[in-house]
Amino acid sequence: MVREARSRHPKQSLLNNRMLHVDRSCSKKRRLTQQRCHTSSDQDAWDFTGTPYVPVYVKLPLGIINMECELVDPDGLRKQLETLKSVDVDGVMVDTWWGIVEANNPQQYNWKGYKQLFSIVRELGLKLQVVMSFHEARDDDVRIPLPKWIKKIGLENDNIYFTDGDGSVNTECLTWGIDEEPVLRGRTAVEVYFEYMQSFQDEFSEFFNTRSISRIQIGLGARGELRYPSNHVKNGWKYPGIGEFQCYDEYLRKCLKKAAEAIGIPKWGSPPDGAGSYNDEPEDTDFFCKCGDYNRPYGRFFLNWYSQYLIDHGDRVLTKAKLAFGDTPVSVKLPGIYWWYETNSHAAEMTAGYYNSVTRDGYAPIASMLKKHEAALNFTCVDLSTVDEQKDFPEAKVDPEGLVCQVLNAAWDAGIPVAGENALPCYDSEEYDKILEHVKPRNVPGFMRLSAFTYDRLNQDLLEEDNLKEFQLFVKRMHGEDEEDL
Image (cartoon, one colour):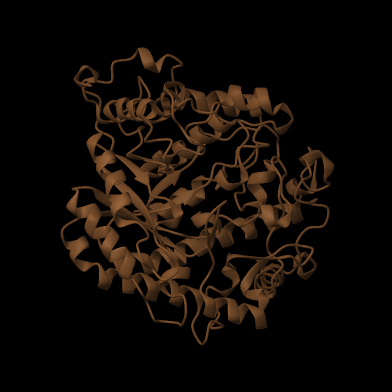
């Protein structure tokens, strides 16, 4: 079967889709990043035999568990998992959906389908990475909403969701403004997340005891990532728009107002004017343009508050996750928002909550928070080529490789493990070689390598004979095994 050419446009459904010192020069920033993230364009010529072992996981499809929490096709899934096992994949990553497990009533949890799924995975000798998915999921074939009882609350009080400047409500996940507000039938959002995690720990204690579960990834926002839902397609966003700030619900506005009053400037207690709309470019706006308001006193105050609220949310939920899961390793996923990276303001990153600009490292504070909880960082887009993306979309001023290197360096500086995921489907050697450049770069200290990689996600194309052979070769290289054994 001939595979269709890989799209270089970051499809909406897949966009889930620093350095030693920060300098005011974009070009110098890139040079410093490249010095610490040296890669080679001829990775395929390098013999990976004997290189450090990096485990490879495969993320399972969205629809394997239905809304009644039943495993949809146990026999078919077992065959697919047996195929993955035959090419020495280490394990699988599984989303456990809040909207399925606690669907009908608060504190009534149904884990039935996941028990059956986990048993099959364990029988085959595969490890489990489990995601606590507190957001809704949507692709071409599957939609998993938030719990029904949450939706009912939202009908009476839509301020429980993130809201943009036009008042458009995003029901993908709960606003962080209610993390400590008891508006969910007497519970705060953080309490709801904690009790869900405790229920999971109780139900699957035997899998924890036998180390069948190797890591728990904590969903912290839109698409399960620590981010504001700034570029949601349902709100009209299209690549490479800068997105919009998402802090107009009454709870976040109250927090912003309180922060402004605390420094004695109450007039700063509102989100910025002139920040544009979803599909603008930075230079279309007064806030993000080259000499824009983002780098003036009010802009710096707002961006500090907006980005710190993201970090504080992660801190609150991870504190509870560590209580629930004890010494089981946990991780957090960050998205690769690489468009407009080559501009001063990094507008698309800022609207998503990352106060990253030509004069400021926005990822080091996040890495420091993760270090506090000994949490790993899982980062996307390690498969993308800057040259290819710039060629196809020069107007977007992209640099996925520069962004990857910056984020990895922030994590390594903080002393936390880093794992990676692909942003787009990978099937051929060129795409796998790009991943290997980041996972196993040459001539760098041992700690400057990825600790694990997750393939996003299992599909029938991956299991086609030629594609599977390429994937098997990739797995061997990740494991540092002799390729001649193929």
